Length: 267
Image 1: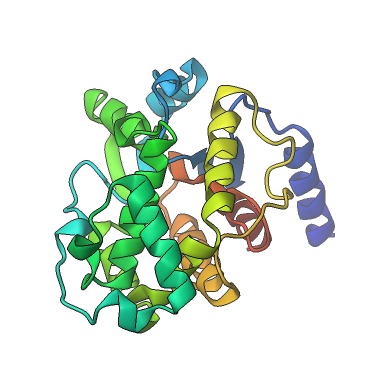
Image 2: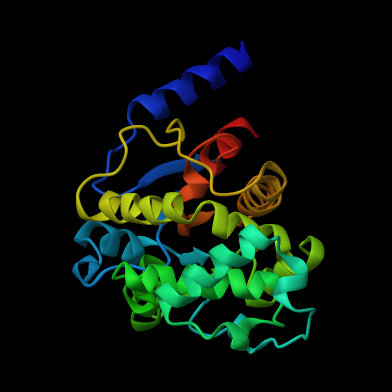
């Protein structure tokens, strides 16, 4: 009978869930109330300022929870480990594609030739986003962090910059699969960025958690960068003290197989 009653409560909470004009949903974990927001780390100028409803949610929260405080951490681009030439690490076809992207983005190939592959991938992705008109200071998590500072809200990190850097450094072959996926799925990633921007400027997908999106990672990278992190964050959020929290994670963590909202509702 107890399980049946709990099931009815869960169903009722889902039926009464509020729809927002940006990717977000409310989740209740016992005495922990989460406003879970699908952030985009780089945004366009017309994503300023934050939606009024989101600002109100932040004002009502006991703390802001983000993947990492990007206003305080060191840049991963300061890392300068020397690796073999990219010509030795990439196939001829991949090297040609890299050279094409470098020319397109005005990146000096010699400057990146001996950098770790994960670092090259991040540089390419950042430049691609900038060419699409996206800026870091217009990103949702950056704006939330700035607003939290103004409101003197506590900021909690799910990982932190050092943990994220350690994850990148732990990738196989200095992140070569990440660079290869970046080159392979270049156009798909561009469309995905534009899609996520539209979620904030126009309307979010109708059903958080159930949307099928094209993958820009191989299965092994998707497991490491998405699924495993979702599982870690799920445990972290369940262990929070009672209270109201605004939680901002990358929007893609809210959708697809093994998404964070689904994990939170299962546990």
